[in-house]
Amino acid sequence: MLLGRHDYSVGMITVGMKMVGDGGEAGGGNDTPERQETAPRTGHAFGGEHLQRVLTWRTAVNSAAYLLPHLAPGLTLVDVRSGPGTVALDLARRVAPGAVLGVDPSAVAVEQATGLAAAGGVHNARFTVGDVHALPVADASVDIVHAHQVLQHLDAPVAALQEIGRILKPGGILAARDADYGAVAWYPKLPGLARWLQVYRAVHEFTGGDPDAGRAVKAWARQAGFDIVTASASVWCFSSAVEREWWGESWAARTIDAEFTTVAIESGAARLCDLHEISDAWHRWAADPDGWFAVPHGEIIAVRPP
Image (cartoon, rainbow, N blue to C red):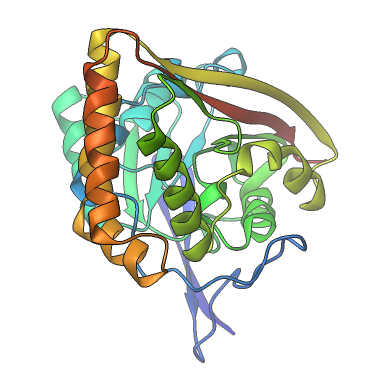
């Protein structure tokens, strides 16, 4: 039950703080018919501090290139699950003097992003703690909402997209991009990386997400009421020595991170010895000059109906 709403401004974005009472939780429930029931997600199982290292690599160019032609000075933008803020700040520079609001469930990420904005002198971006299923933003108040690698982690992606539609102005743009782990490819064909993919998919599904979200993003947007949806695809590719070191060593660490390990063992996806073998395989892949890894992504530009 919605108990109240308080509006305030961040730059030119009016922010409405929603409060949910009676134990209710906005946007709950699995709204993808073909997905099996999964355990509720209670924490971040995907790598803790090592995940933050991955997130800080992301920029507007390598993670939101499909959105860039739609940006213009003066537009307002909300970045949902903005993490450490690297992409949001890149976008803020491109829409200045328009305001950008980053929303993330982690207070630690919000603090990191706020510090990064201050250090970079980006004054048109602000960050706040919030939930994608109950965004703290007023109705029909934003030109663009950006969601990168968000929908794959949600048990109710269509509900989240409906909430995004609520805050968009008529004619406003939703830009969403998600990986598709059902189509990743690598070389050499190390058995340890094949085992990694099995475990990662199992953990992802156990925590309520969909590791194949990239292929479903267009359909989810249409289910959420977006009639005009332009879909495309792009790939992250890691092959050079620097790229292999960054991607491979990040995954080697994430695989044996305490949070990932806990969920992998709890879900029955792997034993501790399995995880260490997977981590060793990532080390070997990163050190191999023939190493190559590709992660395909589905991405959409969807327009809110008038």
